[in-house]
Length: 435
Image 1: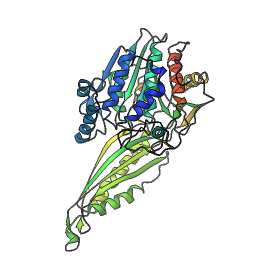
Image 2: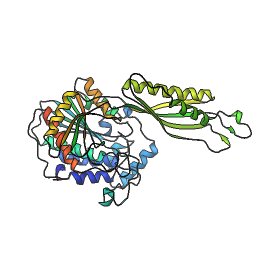
Image 3: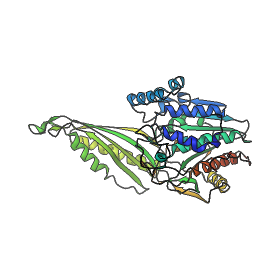
Image 4: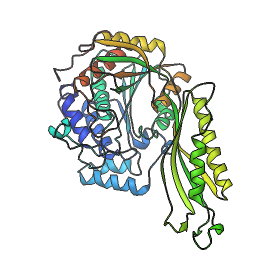
């Protein structure tokens, strides 16, 4: 770990790519981040439950899943003492540089992978060049390996600069399930931030393009619904049952009929259903996973309320009972124009950037908005940027990959932006990485 992060951006990103872990199971990932952060040298490092209140987590998986991924990390030689501090899924960390008088600046990068089996096709670069996911069932299919690399290298660059102030870098777990943004936003480390940056790679923006600040991220919520009825013999005495599957069918049809809203766009989707035992049995229990989104937080709340009501009323109609739980959610928060201008100016001076787009609609959801909302509510400024990359297929696909030229670009854009709000003009060189 003695070599500078900025001298091995591609090497680090590829190593992180090999070991993706799902939300709240990022045990080996967190340990690797801690190893790198200790080598860089920071003034404060809060790991797991020291970085946030575990009770504030959302969408925490079952104990069985947590234990499975914990044991995997242990089997791969991860430090047992550090792993013990992460037991139960308290993953992620916060690193702090304290450099005297000056602004408090926050940077958030996400660390989790997705349940997607990565392609082994010879034309897929990670497979061809030997850094395909080694887990068999998970993949960094959204670029979080790149984000972590950016976070570490930017922290290192700021440390070596003339930065004066406080830099807080959030290595946030569970973004893909919208579970980690809220606890980090509620933590002591999110207090008093004057300027906050978040960033994503790609999102259909090509290599050489930077979006200084996103607008209109969709507020969203993930929902688990369970309908309970009464079992019966489907041939002999069907009238004695309360059919949970029939109730679910009514609920699904009703959910997709939620009226549009005059204040703006909403989205609903039922993404998975499960239940029943046999063709001759009236099903007494079914489960569904659904979501609601809105152009604003208020519109999401409208769609969520309607979704809940329609599950409950459909169950009641068929003599069943519905339980609807909000597993996780995130609000809308837009980038502040003043900070958008800062990022745009910083990006203009970066090698390899040939187009700077001031703002663009995000079109999806992100739980970094919890941190943005906290900072803005407390009087600070927040910005969510996109550093473009050529990716052969879309995010969340088995053949997703990034153009590694974007590694250096992202570090420079973030470093210049952070130093700019702190009034520092000189930016440390990138030590020749990926030239």
